[in-house]
Length: 248
Image (cartoon, rainbow, N blue to C red; front, side):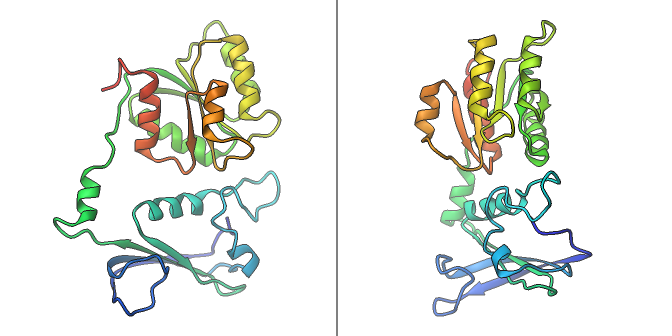
């Protein structure tokens, strides 16, 4: 993410793109859109930074001062709703972001698609352990799971996870762990966790798959591989699938 802005403003309006009119994204169909514009007067971005802002975990912050994820999440949400996002920034000129989301007319394919959104599965107090070194991911996943009815413990250090599992006073029904973490990655953490409790189910979360395909991670023993940005339906269904008899 870019450095914090001094101040910002937000504008909302409606925009119609005709068939022969230039559009923000060549894949964006002609039609009616809601246009949300967020403009800040911060330091702006160089072309090199602007080209990378949508990469998961790309950041201009110094090492140890946090990692980026916000714009990648926003872009994923907009893309999932068949919209587009643009940014036109230069050093010393701030950063205006424009987001375009299609208007769903009554009876349209978009409205039907929205009405068929995957069912949100809820839990019944199962105890979950979430392990991720990125604060934004930890807090977001935790809030979603607690809203869905689970009891959640969060850890940023995989070694702390092993300590929780070894404690006789702790019991967890499921672990959700990030793949890329300093010191011990998600696969190493999972192997150590299974050495302590061989039966505990583990879901892997990742911003980008590296050496292996999702199928190969599942063959290693993971119940599911969730690709970030993680949506509420995606997370609810993956977790509920571990407890099929308790889902509802």
